[in-house]
Length: 457
Image (spheres, rainbow, N blue to C red):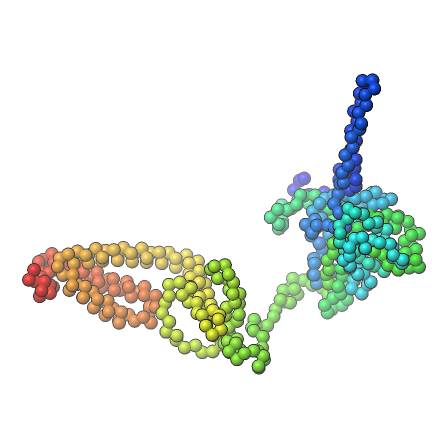
């Protein structure tokens, strides 16, 4: 099929319609007096007439549970199977589709029931149901019971039903669809009725029902029988097998993207108001502080409930004096009295680390700093070992420790909690000091740095 073209077909009949088929094999012999008995093989084609897999439905319109102005829309349903509406023959009307899409609103007398198939199709006085129970049917089924007069007015006759199903071939290139779309040819089933609508409010509920009319051939083709059922003299209800259904809400106001989007506007996200004495005091205080219980997936695949609070506090916080930690698990706080974790700081640590690594410039700067710091530390260690080998180990070690303590007091932990800047400054000072000591050793002045007991060696 060429791109951007649509193909339509009034019907696509399968190679074999549903039913029981028998194959017969005969062999003729020219030998006098010899006979060969024929062989027979029977098989059933087609699925259960009372059940339809949900996967057979590709899409519905109006969408399930939608709310809008669908007053001038004929509900329709698309099947993934291109031959589904014609896979079974309607009694006394083989060219008709065996499925019909009926539409009722919430004020009309149409009830869905789930019953055992044998009980559902047992003849009953006052009910019209030409379906005959067969052992090949499913044990349980869904049926739709409709007032006889209403059903006669809503169910299409043979002429209309033939126009309610067709096959369609659509190119789905450059269109949003699922990962594995069905074949290009699809089958479509239409309703013959417009939805009911009311002005304003929540609209009126309309329900669509895909029913089987396989055994309703006489009703579809005989106007006198339809008139008899419509008069409700002999029959008060009609029972029909139900295969699929969905509902939507219809109102007469115009709905557009702006209206739908503005409908999403809600108040600020917050916990519900906490009534006095409705919860234990300890739990009530935690909720007032902004904590909320959330699902917590642990590393061992088990799950629990923990408390979480976002970055905005409902009270003035004091400096906790907590020192930096190396991983998110170290920030988990456990309350033994309540038996629950507080994951607020742990979640903030993990989120902050991910946001930092997502920043390309920060990640590059961090990598550069780590590489430079490693090279600087390796050089300092090598020079330190060289100086220690010249007999000045104790003096250099004590002076290094003194310089380190001096640098820490000067930098302060509050200014650089991560310790990155302080480490760099200390390394620079230490490197300068060792260079000076090596220079003195080269000039024969290392003995001035030796301890008294070392000078005797």
